[in-house]
Image (cartoon, rainbow over all chains, first blue to last red; front, side):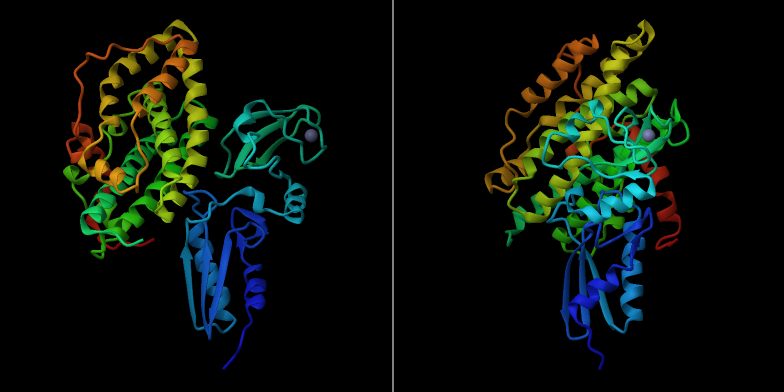
Length: 163
Length: 257
Ligand SMILES: [Zn+2]
């Protein structure tokens, strides 16, 4: 029988991407909370980014596909709510990837009142780094992003909301 | 957490209320899809609807587990009849116009923030987790509805008139929000749901402050109040909403994408 170590499972999970933010994998996003390996059965605990995130089902199916392909016979994916997802779990590397992709990474920390005062904050433009920007709408193409406009380079851009 | 049968039943009821409020309001908001006044608002209402339906899915899924009779969240959403729904009458009221939609949303958002904040300290971990997740979303829902209310109330004469009209029409559905019945009393007594006394005062206080800024008048409290939604008494509008929401699942049971 084939044996797969837990760290290899985590590596495999790093090949599953959030279909709505194709530059970040689900481990970098902080969606994967736990990997439990028992013989050749694997249980993965994931937590949704937003309650209504329509990508969760795709992600679940993708996890099962990737792990089954690697020879794991029984894969169970469980959605948990006991840990509340926060953008604080997105590390510096992932934030840089977002910026390069043209999405302003989350600014501030979720526990601070930063996001409570979002209407008056100037998010840094991912293209020209200017803070001479304004909020167009708190709601964007996906739940996790807000819309902004840069008054220096005249580019509209998205911001990964700090939550 | 091990619960006695009567507490389990009460928790099931309570979760239905939480889930149904969000499912029905989410469905109502989704009716705006493609019809909102501007595209940003179309996207905003669609996003809020999605959050609410997602929250409903979590609460109803948990409810089904607590009930333990093999029903799923979809069974609860699509195969219960009108009198089995426990959502507030407020959230089933039709969209009418943008003013009614925003006033209804604002009344609900202020309430939702209060109840979710309270539930984050609930000893049932799953419920506390769902509450703290939903609260993050409810906070920006409230910011959205409040910002609109300020603009509509303190906008033009016409926008003020339409908004005041919506407030007057919806006010009678707000009193029952804070009725505490046997189900909630039992959960409070068992320490599962934290104490909720003083909620109506806190709610009124927030509404009052915003209304003053928005140049809107609080209606008199002696209007005929509707009540009883938590026991399955609804206005005529819920049945029509359910007909549309449930027809696919009922016509093709077990249908999958
Ligand atoms: Zn720029």
